[in-house]
Image (cartoon, rainbow, N blue to C red; front, top):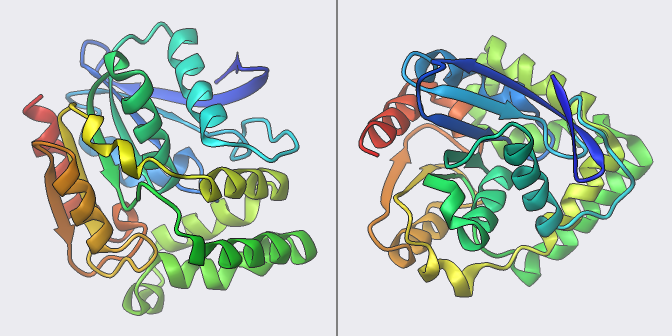
Length: 262
């Protein structure tokens, strides 16, 4: 389904328990709402699950960029408003977790809880050239030029060697991402800087990270845990950046245990 938000069409899906609390799931860069397929069945018995394609991804519009996190955050607020969703549980992975931080810092009354998965609060200066290389590669070679390097960053060598069906699903999401949307969202990620405001987050917060996530490593999640009062930290073994895909059982268990307490 689609709805017009912030000047563009946003694609979304709602499933699950119509009487349950709403859980909003926000995906990674170069994925789409299907990234959360391993989580939906685990959640929808007790919760009403809303997944969406963020600006520049999936079936949502991909206007020319650059984008920023304020825009992506306002897209999310506009989507909640359009669907008459008041306070929700927010689950965001990677870029989705960056949007979650925007929501928690600017619209805390719209969130019941916050799950920050394989994400971080700031983009260090030394990472900027890497992001520029990714922009340049996508501009010259399309998303196919970003496939192998991205998968190697997202998953462990063992997971890639096993080549499970969930890996093929992620490949398809990555390759179908519009180049303009990918690049537009990279600009948003490059501007990430919430580190000095983390202590302002007072919501119940769960932090999940793959033990072998070298993009947003365990040390970054530990820092977020230290600065967000009362937060919980779960480290998943045998998982890199897309921990929800690589270790869905352990990820779902941690998320459900947290959500059921709220």
